[in-house]
Image (cartoon, rainbow, N blue to C red; front, side):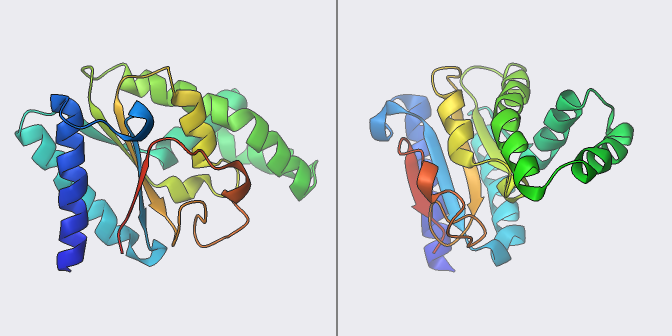
Length: 193
């Protein structure tokens, strides 16, 4: 697992370098994707929780944000409902539409709602902070990480790290058709293995 530790050390050095203005990310955009095998999500979450703690202990404001929680909040906003009301509303909405209509509607409206929710969370933290976004797999197949990155660009000065389950950037959860057509090319990609 020394290569895993090396990868985490590389991202730690890049993140602290961005904070210290000694490292300029690709394109000057402090967005990072950390791609890991989906079956190692538990380990990736643990390792990044420790990374966030290490950053914070060393004076770099850092926080983890669950995209699953953000996704739920965005759905509640779209359906004008509480969490308790959401499931019945989703079932009703789904019964009246085909799978393609559902996917199309969510793909169109959810990214903007997710970004609104993220910006609200980000606003509660010192500028700049490192925002480690976990549980990106919860967005599949409705929202592409690239659509979130493109909407966040220019709206935040925070450093963004997305933990990305897949075997290559753009192949979330190993589903090759998912993100390849709309890849966000800015920022940096690091691979767990």
